[in-house]
Image (cartoon, rainbow, N blue to C red; front, top):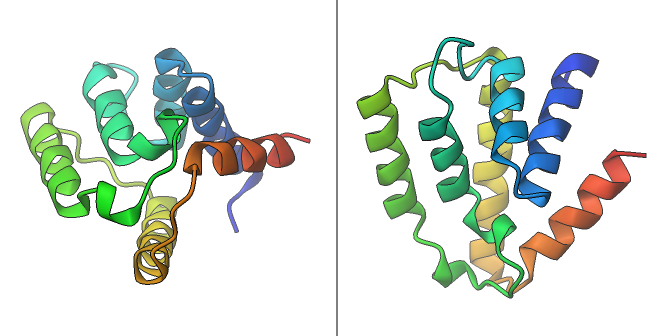
Length: 127
């Protein structure tokens, strides 16, 4: 479980994704410890957009539409180029959960409008 401040910061990031609001995403990344206040947020926001591309587009996605390895490579290049090396403790749990979910979705071949599902989840979490 995440602490309440961490949960609220992830919810801020999720709302930033839903609202296509780079400033909100950047502010959440600072609150979460992925980014220092003195760092340019643009590269990390770009990495978020790459990793979570299906959440920014209102259309059905097939697991085969998303190149996980290619996306991870691009994010790794951004991280190296812009020295985005911060990894707060809570990120380990989040990454494990996301990787596990992606594996299940791929194995089941779940075609879905992930943005719509995500918006519903964010709305429920915001209550």
